[in-house]
Image (cartoon, rainbow, N blue to C red; front, top):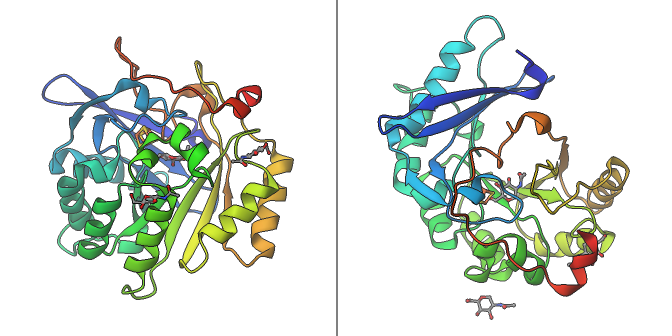
Length: 289
Ligand SMILES: *[C@@H]1O[C@H](CO)[C@@H](O)[C@H](O)[C@H]1NC(C)=O
Ligand SMILES: *[C@@H]1O[C@H](CO)[C@@H](O)[C@H](O)[C@H]1NC(C)=O
Ligand SMILES: CC(=O)N[C@H]1CO[C@H](CO)[C@@H](O)[C@@H]1O
Ligand code: SF4
């Protein structure tokens, strides 16, 4: 078991489909379980391995909760215990919002798994109406995958942006978070070499999130076979991080994990025979690939 890379757990569902759960220990003593909410995913983010499968089905509430229960049982002794849950496995959690709301409620309930709502994070690629619904019903943490600072780039790498653009997404967050007490959104930003890692992007990012209580997580891209993207160098990432920090942003860097074993969030599953389309990059980015 190679713990620093994350431990992959496979579950066979009643109908023969397989879902994956990852347990990620961290040197700080935190151990996070990354749960799946769907088999496959409909969002077709261009850097995502799960997205290549298309959506097969939504998981039931019990199938989501069971992943955390099992991980907790497995990790209750030898390696310390599970401290955090993130909905960042297979699927867009807010596309399966009713079951995800129920599952996360069970995870934070005193009679359930009894996690603090701050330790249970639901991530989304930016489904705006569902974000509103989630924030009105849940106190669990919300992570939004930004991954780009212009609609041009985001339309390409995260096609959901064509439906809910950056100004709508960030405007909604600004509006909805105002009424929540001491609540911070977590923005996820995957660094893709030559695509969104310039200082210009850092400047735009600062403008975009102005007025939203938040933390930013810079994520090193996990290259996998068939991917057209390359990771940003560590040096460039640090520069980007420092630029944001000097503007007063709360910013973290997350190194990639498990790249050689296909076991990291956002790249789970087996692509099927029929795959969703790869989208044409805007012309000025074709050189970066
Ligand atoms: C970028 O966006 C996707 C879409 O939701 C998200 O899952 C992911 O966290 C971001 N990238 C990575 C590798 O984290
Ligand atoms: C973003 O979407 C909103 C609502 O659909 C629309 O009114 C607005 O013009 C769009 N903004 C941009 C910059 O495309
Ligand atoms: C949208 C945009 O400006 N993207 C930038 C991302 O980063 C690359 C390389 O640093 C720039 O060339 C792009 O212009
Ligand atoms: S990154 Fe997340 S939302 Fe996007 S296709 Fe992959 S699993 Fe779905």
